[in-house]
Amino acid sequence: MLVMDPKRWLPTTKKEVEARGWDELDVIIISGDAYVDHPAFGHAAVARMIEAQGLRVAIVPQPNWRDDLRDFKKLGRPRLFFGISSGCMDPMVNHYTAAKRKRSTDAYTPGGQSGFRPDYAGIVYSNILKDLYPDVPVLLGGIEGSLRRVTHYDYWSDELKPSILVDSRADLLVYGMGEQPLRDILKLLQKGVPFSSLRTIPQTAFLQSKDNPIPKNKNWETVELASHETCLKDKKTFAGNFKIVERESNKQFAYRLTQDVGDQTLIINPPYQTMTEKEIDASFDLPYTRMPHPKYQKRGTIPAYDMIKFSVNMHRGCFGGCSFCTISAHQGKMIASRSQESIMKEVEQITEMPDFKGYISDLGGPSANMYKMKGKVQEICDRCVSPSCIHPTVCHNLDTDHQPLTEIYKAAADHPKVKKAFVASGIRYDLLVPKDKKQEEDINADAYIDQLVKHHVSGRLKVAPEHTSDDVLKMMRKPSFKYFHAFKKKFDKLNKKNGTKQQLIPYFISSHPGSKVEDMANLACETKDMGFRLEQVQDFTPTPMTVGTVIYYSGYHPYTMKKVYTARSAKEKKDQHRFFFWYKRGERKWIERTLEKVGRPDMVKKLLSRNQKVDQ
Ligand code: SF4
Image (cartoon, rainbow, N blue to C red):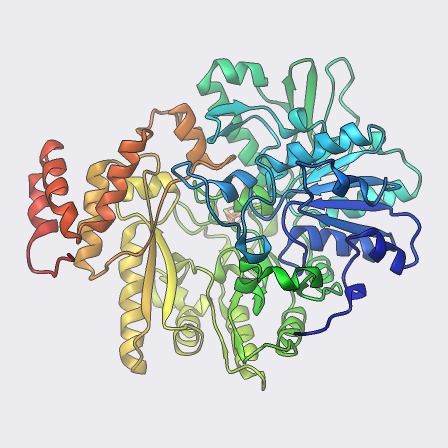
């Protein structure tokens, strides 16, 4: 077993704090995930950033909330504040399936064991801290805080909940990626500004009495959302609120938002500008050990860590704006890209890891091929209110040049200790099917696909058409299925030319708002015609803060205010899902009956004709 010096990690126990010669801590981070000292884990990124400011910080990972709360007391009270990050996933998504069944494993815990964090973890942790240390400020961050910062639909309790600040009693919420707000918060606290006076830090939210005036900031205009209580009474109003929240989350120069809730007012300050290359490099270049804390050595591997330990994240943000996805609500629409130098430095670090066998598992990002992409004319982007840069069509102002990305792929592949550098993140194929030869040359699409398919696909390339019906795809803010056909044609041609047998693995979703049984039958027919037996399929999960979730709850599309059909009952959802498995003998009769019931007997023949093998 590898012997590791715990002093290389940030302290997690009193003994480790003392070993650093510290008699007090400035900040204590409570984490719902196990402590993995790697930039992909939010608690580590934030704690390393606090350390870099010269402050004393410790992490309490996965504290026991069911005993005498000794984990919350063991490090005493911090000088500045407690920070909470309940994990890389919303705890409810982590704990339950789309069918609301409890999961038996947790990828962010050693041994994949479940039961190491509570449901609604941020609320539970914060209340414990507020009871134990009423006078120590609590700062709530992470995905859970971000996605629950304003009135939101909670699928698991099937109700609208107010901002998480109400139930958690936290003093301040940081949404999005935490480095920029934290940098300014720490700077002000170090200057002696009281925590309660931090009222105009961008990308933060807080509650104040309705009687107090809105804090002054001459650079921000303020927009008032409908109150939480009005949303409870009127689903359409809730849908309308979402449109404003989404628009302001993605704008370059956004408004400050306010929302009354009970006798308080929620204030959400606008986000920071997109991180510069220097800023994002600084975050990734912090002295991470890139490994889980050694205390977990006897508890088994951490599945989420195993998945990413040899991978490199090259950028943050996603301009896709897919209606079921929360990435832009958390990381924003604009892309923050690392420099090639910083990326290659991380590749070098990976090659030095003791169990590295020569394979980088992913050179990726939220979408693999958005690296360095941005508006050609920034002033146009500065005024833009679109939630997506590529839906309904790729924006004429978006520079989709793939060359910088191709260069990094080549540099990683050329590293003497790298046998293969794979791309496992999903790619946006609609960016790779330009309308003519000239555009193809401008964006270097063919050179990119060629490099990708020849050198960076492990046999299977992930793509996410998500549906085949154009009406549903429009609802999902996804490109027409014709783009998938066009990309597959290119992909197959390259395979032939290179003599390779790479496969495309398409991902699909059932029960998304707008999807009917006939659409699922159509999906089954189309993918059957293309020769696919689908394996990567999932049922729509209404996570907080997506367009899809707002439609699921309210029945209205927040941008058009038109009613949208949505499969809601367990039976409706299950029925849609069954169409993925049309080739199973046990499903034939049911599919036949269902399609006849919805008046589409024509599809029965198309889908169940015997010219393809049917599984037993
Ligand atoms: S102008 Fe185009 S590229 Fe710029 S943010 Fe808007 S949609 Fe995106």
